[in-house]
Amino acid sequence: MVLKNGILKQSTNLSRSMENKERVDHYNNWLGQRGLHCGDDNRIVGTIYLGNNYAKKNDYYGGYQGNYLKRIRNLFPDKKNILHLYAGQCSI
Image 1 (spheres, rainbow, N blue to C red):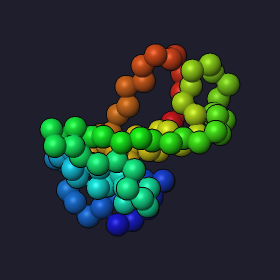
Image 2: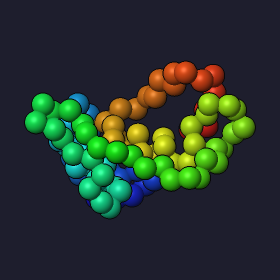
Image 3: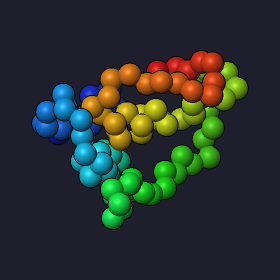
Image 4: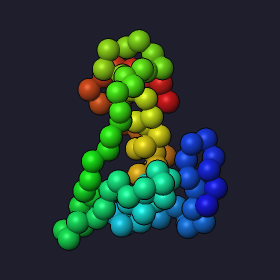
């Protein structure tokens, strides 16, 4: 595993779509604790604590705060594009 730009890269082939269990394992390894798990119905279950640091890289109302995008990138490392909904701007 290699940490690059805040994303934990495993030696797995990420050109294929990952299973939810693989996503959860990848995220938990990056986070260093067991924050998420895969339920019996194959859904990703858990709680993501962002803390009380509401700082954003931009001053746009509704923009992503803190390390939220890093967390999402590490939950979906095989996905290359982010579709940003519900706000008009973000800093990636």
